[in-house]
Length: 206
Ligand code: URA
Image (cartoon, rainbow, N blue to C red; front, side, top):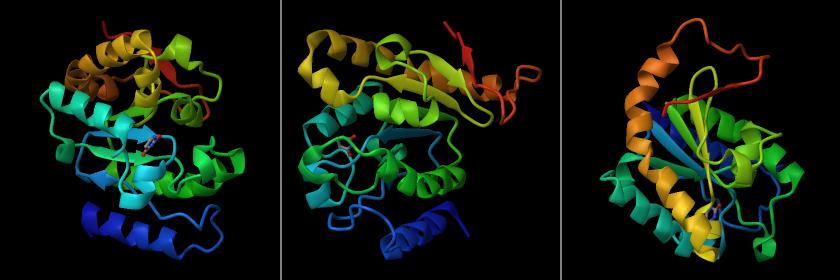
C-alpha cells in the first residue's frame, strides 16, 4: 500500500475510535504530501481548523504557510498536522490525557511518512518529543533522534503576539532549507547514533 492509502486508512481508524477524547469536535487529521521529508507539528486545531477540518488555516496558519512559501517551498509539498487531532473547547491547552490518547495515532502517522525533519511548533509539540526542553531556551536547536531530526521553533501564534518572537520564528524558519540539505548525511552518520533508550543528542550544524 502506498503512503497516501496508509494515511487514509489511519484517518478512518481515528474517526471510528470511540474511546478518544474531544469527540464532539471535528477530526483534523493533517494534510500535505505523504512523501514529504519535512513534517510540521502543532498543538491542536483551533476554531477555524475545526470548521474547515484542515490544520493551520487561521491567522497563525497563514503566518506558517507564508513562511513556507518564503523559503520557496510549496505548502502542498510539506506535511502539516497536530499532536491532538480535535479542538479542545474554548481553545484551552490540550490536557495530558488528550495528548496521550492521540499519541498512538501520531506515532503511526509519522511511521508512515518517515520524515527527515520534524518541525515542532511551540512548547506542546516540542515537549511531546523532549519533555524537559524549554522553548525559550531550545528553539532553533537541532536534536537528533534515531530516524529524524527534531527542530523546535516558536509557535506561529506566539510569533503573532510578540515582535521579538516573530523575528526568532522567521530567523529559525529560514534555516530549514539548509537543515534539510544536511539532514540525510547527519542521519546516516555512524557512531553518534542514539539508541531508543538514550536521550536524543543535540546537533550543531551552523
Ligand atoms: N494552532 C495549532 O497548534 N494547530 C493548528 O492547527 C492551528 C493553530
